[in-house]
Length: 73
Image (tube, rainbow, N blue to C red; front, side):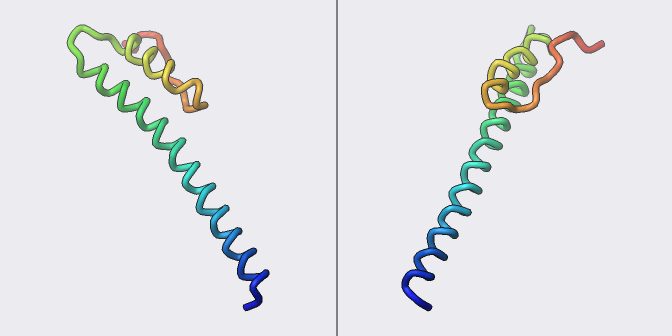
């Protein structure tokens, strides 16, 4: 393989790896917001609305899905 072609192949592989890593990092951050919600729901005296609000404060800046903040009956 020619040295230039090899460098381009390595560069392309590194770019794909970095893009995949960045996507995983964002997904992990959304998962952290969901865990924040789950931990909140396990706290005594908290409501679904309060926990959804905490989740949304975490999730909104990262463009993660938001939860409804009204009480679920």
